[in-house]
Length: 267
Length: 211
Image (cartoon, rainbow over all chains, first blue to last red; front, side):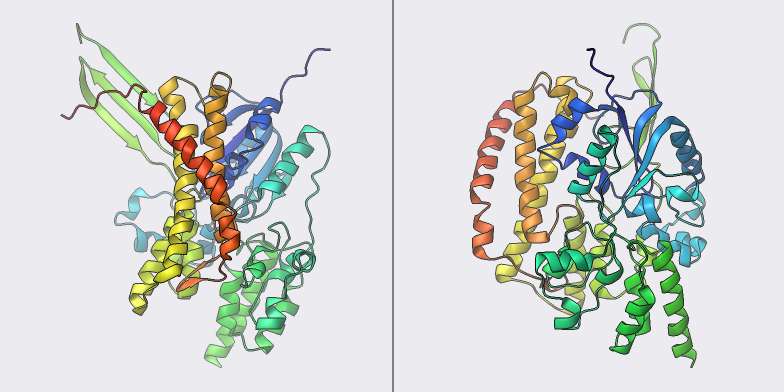
């Protein structure tokens, strides 16, 4: 039987740090096997070979933050059978979505001597703000395990098995003592999606939410609990506003506690 | 160059580099008429959104400037803030920081040498294409890279955007025994690197001429 055509993989970069793409190259033991199974059709960080679309699987890193990128993500969608976002930037807007809570013109003037050279959008948004997305791989950065699971699911025509429960479940499995209960350290674990292996609590620090909100989180319960135990409202807002600040559940909770912080200040 | 010759090179997107850029080169009769490097990497405004953050947050936020060298940013943030606070981190903590940094250097240098640059010297589109003819060197490069990544993951928690670095030191320190587990892998990587350097030193480097 003739061997079927290798599926074409494309890896795209938007506003990002390259860390999620690097995670693919960090699969040192699996990389050459992957290259046997897939045709690397577009992956500038790794190869100058550029094969024309359409592509079977497009992995998208980075947030959409310029007018050119809006056009590009639409073109990529047209060219891709499956479009999967990799990481917090492509999935939720990333750290650069902090501009969404501020005035981007003021940001430009602060950072660039000649802001007129800079073209950017007012908001840094996820790919899903512009095009339909087939799957979102979480994390800042994504993990090697979930990435390999995603690619292997794609190759075998099944759904990827990525947990949607909270980091707390991973902490319990790992046998890590709860940093909130034992040390009083604020931790986003109860509302953050698993996938990192509950790394931060294992290193005796609170989770900072780099995998974004879990499915059906209850950030108000966690937030009120933290406030009642002495965390200042502005610190709670900052905790919610890092790498997934614009993910809907974190965004909404951040706005709620920013309102409380504002009321405290003027109250 | 003999006669009247025009040469135009337009690379719309440079491959196998960190970040994004395009290159435009126009040569006429051997004279460079135009050389333009365009960096179209979009702005992200780190300097602006760091304002108003707690100093403890700076190392994790600045790490996201680059996922290929996050430790460099974490260390710079820590050094800057520690110097502002009049803190000095010395002794074993400093050694541990250096060790984490070495992990990044090993990983990042192996990435650049074997996966990003070597394909240019040997005339391949990528290290994956190169692996068909030079599987040994690609495998060796990946093993060196992996040894660096393993050290980073041990001390920092993970390879990209380690979570263990903080102003003043670390959140948690590994045991001596845990670190010693890396000894053999690192020694093997060192031997492979020496072997690789001997081979790479024999590759043809283009002559560099200054104007």
